[in-house]
Image (cartoon, rainbow, N blue to C red; front, side, top):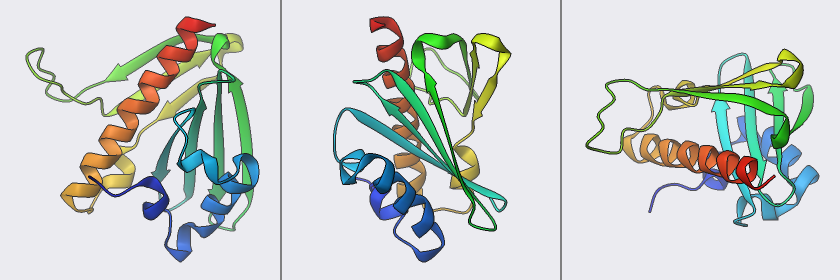
Length: 147
């Protein structure tokens, strides 16, 4: 088994992001099948994307370099389109997407690019982030279809 998202967010530089998620959703956000979280970490900003399958929402928690926390919540029934981008796509094996663009009603565009989090990381972390990204996409599609 790979390194869980809770473990990946356990270092001190990501403590603020993990704390914001726990305050917003409780510890259950990292343990329940109702939630599918994914981190995207860059030098300027750390983001945690959380799909709540039960409520049909996508929440984005962001922490910038000065530790300011912002929260955006979108309803999945407001999604107009979802585009997945692949590198070296093969139809005969499970090629994970590298990034995704989601367009909501009103024209808001949201990009999710977890590959920013995997640069320079060990293979186990890369594989787990890719798996979490696929789970997040699946949860978005699942909640979108059921709404």
